[in-house]
Image 1 (cartoon, rainbow, N blue to C red):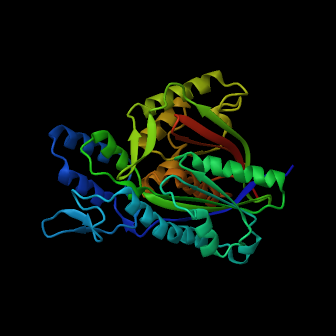
Image 2: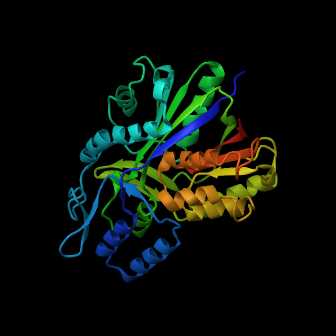
Image 3: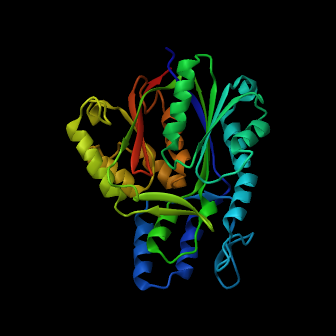
Length: 365
């Protein structure tokens, strides 16, 4: 049976760095001294330096931060319909940038399957159909949409590609993870919501998965759900965009669950009966500094083990399902240098459930 390989990954982000402007924007309407202190402390400890968006920040004559289009006007944030209209307009643009970075060139007509994952926009015809048209793919390409699963949809979309290639060895699968998280900023005084918005930015990845033996060989996908944690991470459609709830208990729950997995270490567990030290490379979804710290502590990893993930978090923030693909791109680019050939790897992402989606991989070619 054929083995699916990530041959290469292209990535793209919008042109505007909004991290610092967002911080100043939030500080402008926070009134509680306690919340201001918590927010400043979390900003300094976030591990994030940049996040990107299509909204261009501007400072008005009164010194207030806004965007040039007035999309986020204080007291008059847009409704969900306006946000979905923006997703329909700018989503395909960002996807095309990622495809250009993937450099398919003459391979576009050879693509047999398209998998598109997104949790930040809903339209029909779907973003998958818009990508087929904009990218000039074969109109008969088999399309699959992975919708509203959140951050771990990176793994779910790769799992689909993995199964397509295993069942059809000549399949050439294009996987697109498109997330426009900054479409869903909320004007709120809820400190927990504000802190979750501090994490997220926009990004898109385009990945080619085939049976060609080069890049990253995929194997052994597995899912694990942490009990009694249904409300720890939620993502619901509201009247003014999508509402994120990210409980402060999430890192602790992940750390305890991974500690249990590390200690039990049987064939049915997350580590597949191996020790953390048996894996040479770790690709962990950069969901936030505290999430990465929880993985590091729970699995008792060396301090530099998650440097790939921490670098992506620093440079882009959390881009939901696109984030893990940015991490894998950096690992793939380092193959044969800082990442040795034939290295064994472990990838994992967390999201609503509270659940972990994971797979093993090997560097090849």
